Length: 109
Image 1 (cartoon, rainbow, N blue to C red):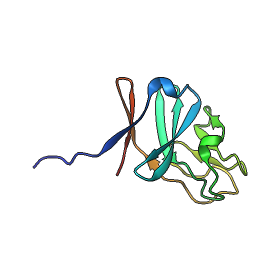
Image 2 (image 1 turned 30 degrees about the horizontal axis):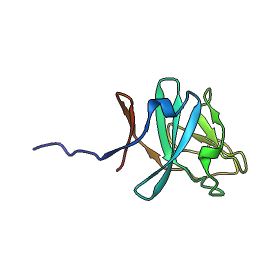
Image 3 (image 1 turned 60 degrees about the vertical axis):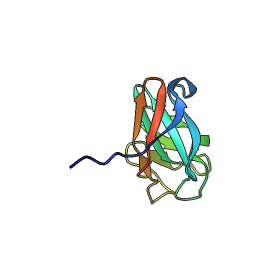
Image 4 (image 1 turned 45 degrees about the vertical axis):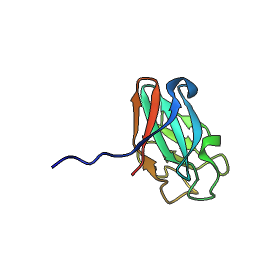
């Protein structure tokens, strides 16, 4: 039995997202934020679960491995999407990310 392939979509080149920065991308109608921290790459839903503000407009906290909502300051884990501070209480979705050469690919479930 062959393994199932998971769709991956190229969203950026590695040079487009500086270390400690984020980029908003639209993938198949979904708005995502792709974040680069050190040698790690993360992708989350771009809408804060509290106020639907664009997380890509917030600050990346590299030490905490989190991104801050620009509207009310809620922090979200880049690893899990879980809120790390109020006022948000619900997580945002997370997506797998893979780098292939210079391409940043997001895994779409």
